[in-house]
Length: 251
Image (cartoon, rainbow, N blue to C red; front, top):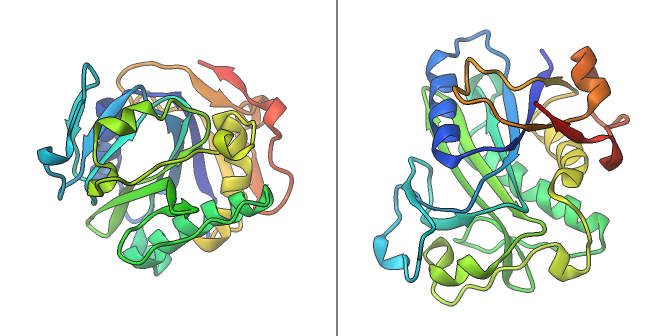
């Protein structure tokens, strides 16, 4: 199978990213390699297709964007790792439930590396630690291909979650890695997350690819492992991923 492409996009506007995912999905064909986009968003509330404005309590000056992902309302902001798998599900032989399971499990596996127990909850997709939510999920499938994905709270300001009913659940508490004693930056979670996720999706290798300005109309700063970006290198899953110190800003 062709290596999956990994794009380390840094911080990107939510609406720009949504438009880019839609363009990518509309333009892809049976031979288009799958991709995973890893990034952060500036502060934004997003309403999924089942989201209700009654779940918006005190949004202040944070923008609210209607999205075509599954799920209800959530918050994105700096310090939260976003992973968007853009997959041809038919080619991979996967269904939506299997992708959701893979995304949840990769977070559970990463947490376990820090001796933190992550759990699922029946009827409430995502990952929880002591009943507090640390990762949220929402997917969209069009023409057999997925977009949207996972948000994983790493080192962010959690206060805006108090302005909503997170995931439509009144009183739901949220947490993040730093509150659980793990001092990490968002991009430092990329290697372990990919090491856990890619085999679950059926991939044995990954290729780091530069941000594509044909997809994103506005230039931005991305994360990049410099040796990988310079060579467009293909790596074997489970092998040596770039370490946290290898990541830098790259335009």
